[in-house]
Image 1 (tube, each protein chain N blue to C red):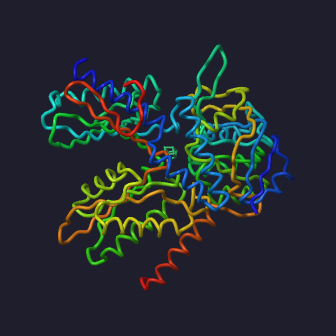
Image 2 (cartoon, each protein chain N blue to C red):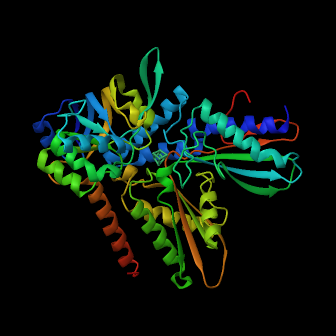
Image 3 (cartoon, each protein chain N blue to C red):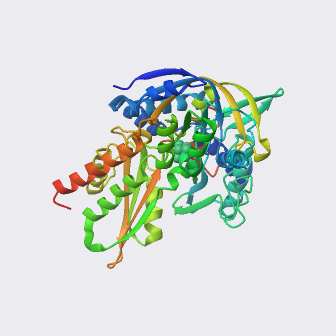
Length: 201
Length: 295
Ligand code: SF4
């Protein structure tokens, strides 16, 4: 029932449209971290009609503020677990529409605005296991680049090369399905049913 | 070594043990959940968690990058000498551990939003004292992540709702929390007393070993009922579906005022970090939650 897929970035719209909620994905290629401050700056640039320092078209954005260390002039990623995605909800739809972001990775899922943009423009949400910071770092093979370090290490745009990065559970697909929402609705239904059974409601 | 040096040294070790290595009862509960989980998505989450726990131990790095807000539970023997200096030693230990492990600086001034940078600030680390008979000092380091803290709830219920009402409040708190506290969680429930007492009890309940049922059979039964009802919801690991939303429910209670019925629900994420040790007056140290080769 649940398919396991290995994908390479950049991702095409066709590859993304084929994904369904519940698919398990392992990614290889380039992913770019961005949290609150980076999102704000990206969208300010979009509004001003200015280019970004990195082309995100076809690439995933990862909601993560990594823990890094400089060793012999090279950045090493020590921990790179996901942060709560919902904080980026007001801004993510614009990144999907204007920057061509094909996948958003984080924890906890996102809201309707993002899900709508994903359906319209062909993008998905991949949930990475909350707290599994070392596992995530293990799949980072190289720090390719970093931009906007002036925002601070966790808030900067880290361009990471990854191999077999996952498991990413597709929790929002480009067909209007939202797994977190479905699980939550069913949980409330089960609860109400159990109350009725016990003559409570 | 002087007492304050021993306390500082032990507390810093406890912080390291806590953030790098989960207690064996928690690990066993997660492994059991992995074996018994039937939902493939939930199972994949548990597999990633187990792999992450293993890597943290192997590389001696914190399990999760959020190394939490730090509380120490101290059970002080009434005849232990040097109690007046313990809090200072604990503060020093936190600064040292923050630098050495390192821990993420998580102490922020609520008005200026400034981060102290060393996990120490007004009332942090928070110290909870208990006076017990004896000559020893028992310290538990309890660093707790923000994700699971943000879903904690407290209600001043009407006494007329009874036990059924309190169960509904607990289950609804879990429903509202969804995947946010990084399930499978441990759920502490504190009942009775006043508002502060019930939350205190709920938090302290999170320290109890997961494999030991409550000695009071009536409470053990309530814990079991809540466990069953919560895991029947199907929220599952990380809120992606499955039968393990919680690893254990722990209930504590105090007598209440006739007019009030406080119920507090404290969530702990799967990264349920805690480490305890007992310091004896002769300077010897026993580690209670973790195996330590050289102490
Ligand atoms: S809730 Fe726990 S496991 Fe999840 S990110 Fe926070 S500290 Fe880590």
